[in-house]
Each structure stands twice: as structure tokens, then as C-alpha cells.
Image (cartoon, rainbow, N blue to C red; front, side, top):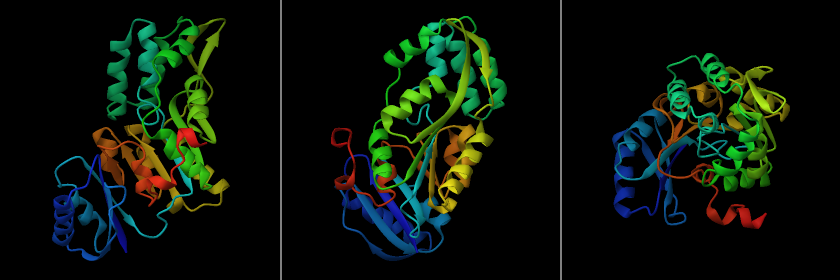
Length: 296
């Protein structure tokens, strides 16, 4: 059996529910039952049929409603692995850091192409970092203080999953100087990112150590799952760019969050309208079970 979850940005209307039920029937699905309305904006529909066809039909529904189609089994995940930039925080750190060097447009254009999957990730990353050579290291803290904002719903998602015993891992193609404080602020168990070369009080324009790229993210998902003795079916991955695709495809549930087209197409679920708390609703966790920033 499968579950189709409708998550409206504000309120789920009766006409939206009727349209969803009709879309599922049109996909060839046999509807078994539906839940009561959850928090005024979420509904679970249990069905038998082809999940791919069901998702395709449901995603034609108009309005700010996100759709998740998944097996009923293993709905509640025990591991969350997430990208950082434009997923757990609202910015791309390297673009904002480049602004302090006066070269944001040049760097941001490369970032956009890399996230779209048009450029080799490592080559593009090393090329952008090289352009930061000589930048005062103090710009990193200034960027953290002035530009880095936590994505809406991020802390609730991570702390609620951690509170139920799930492992939470932040993986970033960005930099440890950002990933460490972000992971601590949101509540992740661990983080993995690239190390900016620094000498004296300046950036060297190089990276130290191995690169965290798409294959490394996938490896980290597998190794953390193995360490926790978890099948990948119990793992959720979330990201927004092309370098997240292997991780999204490998996890039991890959979620593209306000993502680039290639990532959205590769993921099991594409969140386009809601904040990160949608990932809790997808797991059947309603708002009365959330751990909010003020309650921990």
C-alpha cells in the first residue's frame, strides 16, 4: 500500500481533496481510505496502485500544494542527511563570501551553473575558491553574522527527528567554517564540508583535504546508515542542487527542496511551496509532536 500526502501552504480546501481523489482514480489507483484533515492543511490518502503514475497525476493539481507519494512501510525515517546551502540555510555561502571580496556576480554565475549540473562540481568549486585568495578570514565571521539565516522549519525538522532517535547529518559542498556553526544552531549530530585554506589572516585560494562532492555525499549517507545499522529505506535525504542527486536517489526517500530542475526530477518528492516542516508531515508527524526552538 502507498500513501499520497497533500500539504497545502495555508489551508487544504474540500475542492483540492476532491481533485486529488479524482487524480488518483485517473492514475489507475484504488483508494483504500483517507485520514482526517491534519492541522487544517494536510491529508493522507492510502491507495493501491502505481506510485509513479499517482505522483504524475497528483502533481498536475493547481495551487500551492506539495505532493508526496511513498510506500506506507518505513514511513518514519531514522536518519536525515541534508545539504546546507539553499536547503538548511537561505543562501549560498560562497556567493555571499565573494561579495566581501567584491566579486559576487562573477562567483554567483558559476554557482548557479554548477547547481544546475552544467559544470563539473569540483572544478567549479576550486575555481571559485581560487578567486577568494587574499580575502581577510574575518570576512567569514562577518558573513555568518550578517548573511546566514536558517531556513524556515529547519530547526523544527532536525530537532523533532533527533528527539525521536533519528541520526541527523549535515553534508555540504560548502565550507566547515559555515557548516559547523550552522549544524550547532540547528541541532545536527554531525557535519561534513570542505576546508578553506587559511594562512595568517587570509584565505589562500585553496582547499585543504578531500572534497565533499556528490559522490562523497552519497558515501556519507551509506556509511552513516551502516554505522547506525539502518537500511537505506529508513533514510531521508534532502537537497536542492545537482550535486545532491546521487544522495537523493540512494536514500529511501529523496526530497528536493525548492530545488533546481534536475534535482527535483531525480527526487522522490519535490517540495516547492512549503517550508522544511513538510518533511515531518511526509513522515506522519503532525504539529503537536514537533519540537520547536522554544521547547528544547
